[in-house]
Length: 288
Image (cartoon, rainbow, N blue to C red; front, side, top):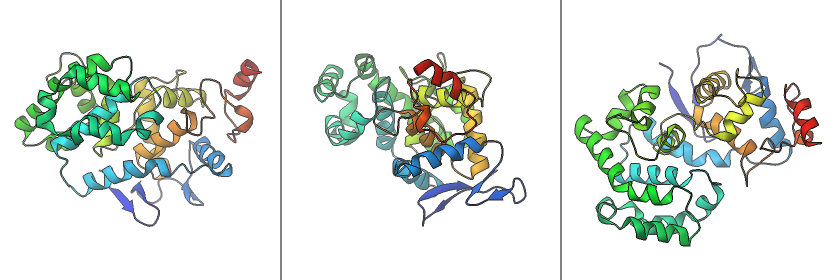
């Protein structure tokens, strides 16, 4: 098993890789995914600080790596923020985090188990932090909290279950219909976002990341499938000695609204330093 270690000077998580697996060039480990470095170079050459977005992820991973237990409140908070990110820009959620925390009483579990779903929905809508599924999400919040409590009962703690379960099996158990621990109105992408929030080294295979991986030709499909996206990000993490969550955050920023947003639904290929992108000419022709 590879050891995830925290580098205090640079504030990043790295995965220890056996010496001699791949050749080192400069500060990155170079191999099959050279375009990934060119994505980073593009952001840095234009003065964009891609590391800032990884700070909260690093903090959660450091806590899990040090085997500090996440409380039920921590899990509920991460789950709720994942829910709120559904099919909407993240920027508005991040900007209103203090107001969101107030709506949920700093994720007091006893309060949330008895809170009115309608009132929660209304308060979120008032601060423009809702989404198309917000009514259903709030109606099922109590049920999802009880599911987390059941996991803790069955395994001693939620973290014990998460730490002892293969990631793909864990995602399936929380996202697939018919599973005992299925979290309602949370599919694969939202479950992964939740797990990232409690320090699990995983990616969120959302539209931005899947689209970029497909465009780079790293997958058979364009956009990449969920499994292709997760496998490619894992391989890139190993090649560049980064956590999977960091790889995910870099790809996401490259295409997300209110972030670097070069490779989005209308790509700005003329601003991108990726030299051998197989989609560059095709996309340039489309948008020109």
